[in-house]
Image 1: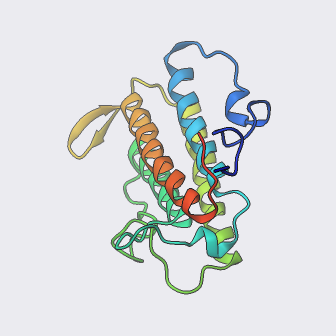
Image 2: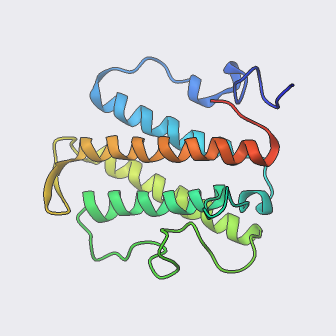
Length: 182
């Protein structure tokens, strides 16, 4: 049975933006490089889908969807980079009042406006996070639930968070249109 995609890959290697990076050197480049790969993977998994497809829920009883992941990851980026690393805990967490599920649920129709808003929030938070990382030492210690934590550990956590949700995105996307791959 043929599957959409390119011999088990999402894109041909020469067209995959994740494969275009050169060799990395050092801890910062490695950590940030992995984070960027997973950010790009989330974007790729959501490409060429309608708002209804992006809002398609995974297997019941889960309310997980690709659009929910974009919203959730905007919240995660905001929380770790603005609130924790910059120590601005006065900033309310994104989607705090909407639901108890960190952005995965929304009211109303899944339409172009909701999709555009979600992507705008995510892109804004990712851009801000990049700026924070550019000016922050990996050795900086911040408070995470009462524990002193280095920024490098937060980056590893972000890679872990994206990797987990990109795995979910693989399965959801395959259910939507059969497309699978790295």
